[in-house]
Picture 1 (spheres, rainbow, N blue to C red):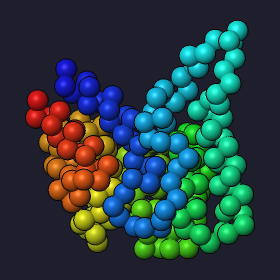
Picture 2 (cartoon, rainbow, N blue to C red):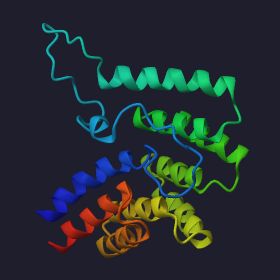
Picture 3 (tube, one colour):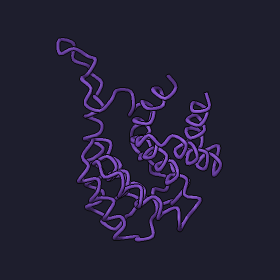
Picture 4 (tube, rainbow, N blue to C red):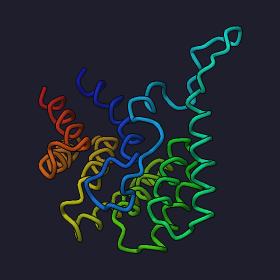
Length: 200
């Protein structure tokens, strides 16, 4: 039962990891995604709205908010195309909207501006994983960790990939590593919760 619960949580975690919850690079700075992570994960992507058509809601839908956020970030990056933080945010927004090719291009542009950006490398790897190229994603994350063993988001992301591949022990080790790096961060707390679930 615990593995089923973790599997669902891992699917959500693959998306949550892209909303700027990293203790790695500071390219995003004080900017954060418009939506809180818990709001973003309230319904799975593509899930129909709970509100019936006969009862239109005054509240914008998640898709509306994502679209507005993307439009805002596209305009901002047009005005300042070299801002790595904006490019990372734009990539995150595309990823959350399941627009994988635009997400990859945004992260690649961020790497063009700042080739050493481990955050951009990690998030590009997660796009590859979402596209089904987990082997390429895993190699990219291992390369990040070879040069920066304390890149918390890379450990967390590698755990998601190895768990998805059925390699539970490896996933647990990666979550433990992420939790040790910064136990109080969002990624640290989420990593520890996965470790605890696996221990149960």
